[in-house]
Amino acid sequence: MLTVEQVKTLVGEINDPIIHVPLSETGGVIDVSVKEEKEHVSVKVAMAQLGGQTQLDLQMEIVEKLKENGAKTVGIRFEELPEETVSKYRGSKEEEQQTIEQFIAQGNDLEFIAVASGKGGVGKSTVAVNLAVSLAREGKRVGLIDADIYGFSVPDMMGIDEKPGIEGKTVVPVERHGVKVISMAFFVEENAPVIWRGPMLGKMLTNFFTDVKWGDLDYLILDLPPGTGDVALDVHTMLPSSKEIIVTTPHPTAAFVAARAGAMAKHTEHSILGVIENMSYFESKETGNKEYVFGQGGGQKLADELQTDLLGQLPLEQPSWKPVDFAPSIYQPEDKLGEIYQSIARKIIEKTAK
Image 1 (cartoon, rainbow, N blue to C red):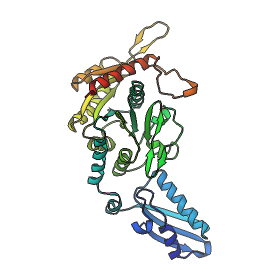
Image 2: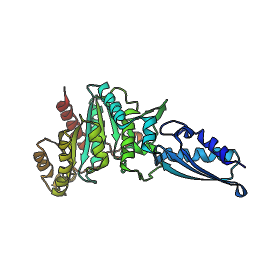
Image 3: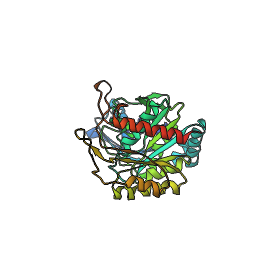
Image 4: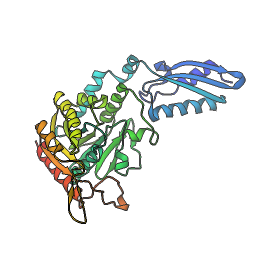
């Protein structure tokens, strides 16, 4: 049966999956106990960042290694390494920000566009996805970050069923419909909830900017979480040069709440490209009559309040799906909404032309 010292040595040889340093070096093997009569080993481990697939992978690696060396059963408890230990190997917040600034400086023509909303359920992610695809159809090089960490949905919307590639320590984004995509969905178990704290989410966003092989881009679209919480604030802090599109419905309450997201953009000195009004009306295919299901005027009122343009009004309409290239939320160029999105994309290109 394994001794305590043997367990410490075996577990200590394993790398922390976040900072790629052996657990023995980080002080990550906190406590070990061995029950010889039951051939059971208990280990308490500290790692740089809890949660997600990385913690599950580390857990499996520890269990397999100890069982291979004589343990019958293994129990593991996790805690997070102190911030000063993580910073020692990974760099400080200031260094992280410098890394992001270097990433921004690599492409002087790269435009960051954050798609935001005041509340959920207004179709913000649908708008972000279709704007990214429409810009790509205009011949632009486009990346898309699903920064809605808690409510990630972009891969499903785009019909993506593959994972990113790995080149050394760099992640290669999945490319679909001409858009390079990265999402939290790629790094957690299928449909598992994300229960991380604010600072940990900020680190994940930093990785999305600095550890992904984006290549040369004209636009990097960010699908922000609804509201004005930690993640949205982190993005505004990280990207001082970002532009923003606010999504609302025509309903007065939705527009009122969306104004907060616009106010946050202005408060952090971001510029607002415009407002997009989603679910503007329903048009009957039989009669051509328009029904304003959620009221009228919310988008224009919000644009006036934020002193910006109403970029477009999107009616309620289901995409026409292509079985060969299935993506449940992407509108085709010949769809009515596809044409509207293409028009909005051309307006964005005109507004961001240098």
